[in-house]
Length: 310
Image (tube, rainbow, N blue to C red; front, side, top):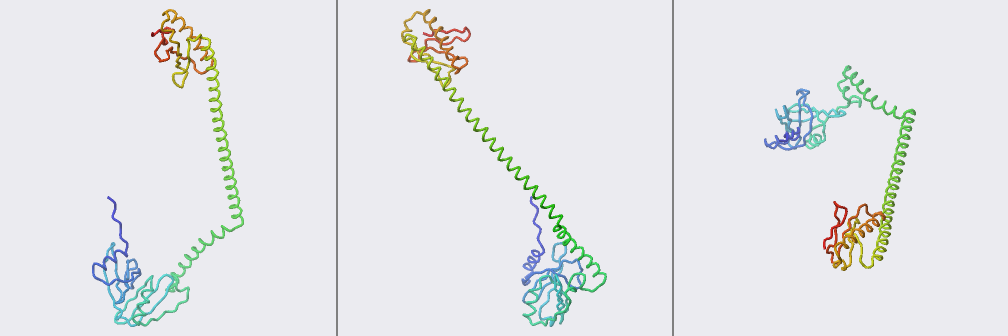
């Protein structure tokens, strides 16, 4: 089961406002004088006043509400990252708010007198607001360290030696990339050349095989022509010359068995030698058949002779 998504502080406050019928307003984080420095505080600013929510253990622990009518004036102290509002009147409360625009708007709207506390710009910085010497010394050290952490790398980056080193590294990188690209181009060209050679070799081999087959067919045809009409044609049973049909004349049907055997064995040897000599098959098997493909003789593998099937 997936872990339940944790709600943020804004979602917690918004849910609380809805559940308790409080007025919705602009939420901002801040702090309240008198609360602990580590307390999580959210302030909701609306037309009627403002509500201060104190959170503990991811839940609203306390709510204090104020109305604008309870205040007659406010002293405003503007800092670098926040604004402090010291409200005076029937009630007194001092808030420090990060997002102060909604608060300013409501103060103007309800005609609450605003007194702006004047500070030198440096006194608005963290560590200098209280004018405590120890705090100012610590803050100064922190600011100097921060400035050094920012400035030193920038200065070091722009030193002539650093620029030269970057130029050397960049040149080496570009040279390496160029070399790698050149090697890839060479490898691609070599691969193409190899493939082209392979294709050409296959084509040449195919042409050579066809030439051998044509020459063998010519020699077989001459043998047929010299057979006094006893052989009609010789052709492979399939695309391979490993198994061959030798078509014979119907005159063999009336021929004595001994003559058939003698002629078949002699003719088979002649045909076989011509095919082997042509280089188109290593050990062809010859089948003697009539024109209708009924068998006259088939190879006898065990005796290296032919069986008459008539």
